[in-house]
Amino acid sequence: MIAHLFMAVGAYLFLTCIKNLLSTTFYSYTLYHYLILLEVAFALLRLLLVLLLITWLKQGLIGAVLTYPLSLAITILLLSPFWCRTVLPLRKVKASKEAVFRKALKEQGSYIVLMLPFKDIQDQLPVWMIKVLLGTEMVAIYAVAQRGFSLFYSLLNSLETTLLPLASEKISSDWETTKRMLNKATKYAFWSGALLVIGGWLFAPIFYRLLFSEKYLEAVPVFRICLFALSIYPFALIQRPLFYALRAQKYLFYAYVIGDCFYALFLYLFISQLGVLGAALALLINGGIMIPVRYYFLYRIKSDFRIDIKNIFQIDEFDKRMFK
Image (tube, rainbow, N blue to C red; front, side, top):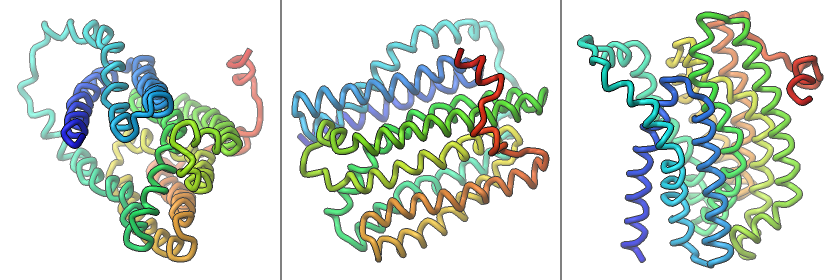
């Protein structure tokens, strides 16, 4: 069994490299429809494989691990013809003799490299804190809650992936259009997140019985609290694309450092008092604080950028045309 797990993990790591190659190519050519298809296909295929391998075939841990490489392999097979069609013309292109990569790394790339460890720390902080303060059993409850939440979160996260290259392309040529685009993305993501919160809250017990088992129903209250992050995440999903488009990755790096410090503090305080529910609450509160902090950094860089909160709750002519 251990050997099979290592093989599955190895396959997933290898396939992730291929997926990153496809993503980078689609980013470079601003092929947003393929980027969306890549992310959505992976999320949906993984959900279907979870239902097939865990719920119906009762494969347990092996089945759960296999969902990752299998869904990734199928996604790559589906998208590889489009990738090949995109890169074939590159055979006639000569490589640049300038140190382009070194120049980019010196300007803002170093901050991206520094950012990654802090992002990983942020992802692992709740697990470390729960293990130290509550024990290994509670880590399992939190992990199951997060696994369910990540399926919902990935549906919104695909929009951020699309905005990354789009904002960089548009911002230099048409700032006003870029602002409208980011505001509309926030608006539609907010209402999509609201529907996911309501649906997830109502059907959480059924969802967990289908995907996991009765013994993990203890994770449902944690999952429900985490779901509320989908109501504030829409205000964050445009921030990273905008930092990258403005070549202000160093401010995003500062935000990660500050966020990790606050997150560690909130996790300790809330887990100590509320148990594993405190970890979910710390996630919400930290997000609620760091989103305005990142907007403050953006305001310092681009003082005419605002999220039109009022428009989120209004239906304008553009919305009517969109949903006719």
